Image (cartoon, rainbow, N blue to C red):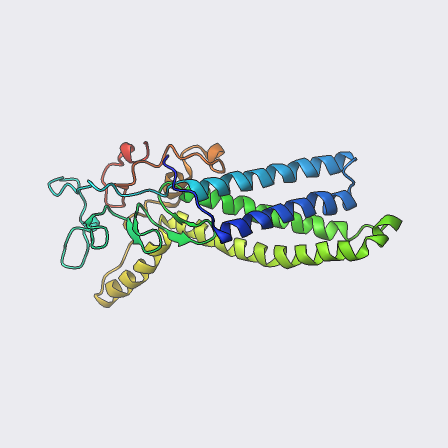
Length: 286
């Protein structure tokens, strides 16, 4: 996979600082107070939370640095391809999809990003928190990061609440102001983060089950309205069934769904649709 250029980003720096703060407060304050890091439960919880934090950082790093998928400058749609479906043609005037800003044709599901100033394959959205577009090659790893991040936040909240049930010792009473600051800051971060990440995770689970991007969802709302106005029923062309949609995004092996693997995603130039008579195996393999 290609990697995009590296540059300083304040939002990315903030995310890494938040991850670091939540990790150290969870392990060295909450777990240590609740179980003690010298006990077996303390070591087990510290090891589990460390593994979770490492997966968060690893997947986040890939989402930040991996190129989301760029449209080649020499890309040219094959207008004579008999298997080229009609829904790959823009409805407006029936013209092929052409980007006026990039001055070249673009494949289905690709969109121009005004921030990155280029067309992105299967673009979902531009995310300021990763300073990158979420697109064809990094969508799965972005989703997996959200899963691990939400799990870590909920886990940390449980540890926070559990550690509050422990009676303070003499040395802890002397550090009362410091501990209160840690607990207040942690609660201030963890509660809204857990809610926001939970909503974001639920939204992307819905999109994956429908095989839609965020952009396609908003386009589909208008398409549905126009279809109903014309007495027709709109169906998202890329929805091929919930389980098939899941495997197209997360991979055919359920054991690798939460791993940052992406060998199954294909080129990003053609996608299986509900109108295909025979599933194209080449679309699910690179």
